[in-house]
Length: 113
View: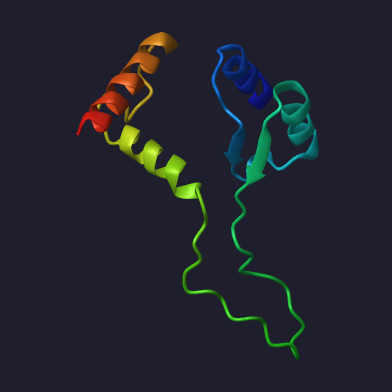
């Protein structure tokens, strides 16, 4: 699915150079495909490791109280804003183009505020 969407973005003439993705896209094949086909770089945003298996006689490292994850909040915030709109909170649209149009309207309204 990711190569199909990225190929469409590349063909549309978007001026992308660097992509951020979550850990679902950490495969080497996708990274190589993006570099070869599009010429973009891919950076995976990883969560800090908190849990692990330790022997009984070994003290585990302390868990961080707060860890800043760069760029991860941008996508999560945008999805939360879109989900706050009544018509976009459920996927009721029959035609994908009308759903896309509603997303554009919602994001345009947010940008105008």
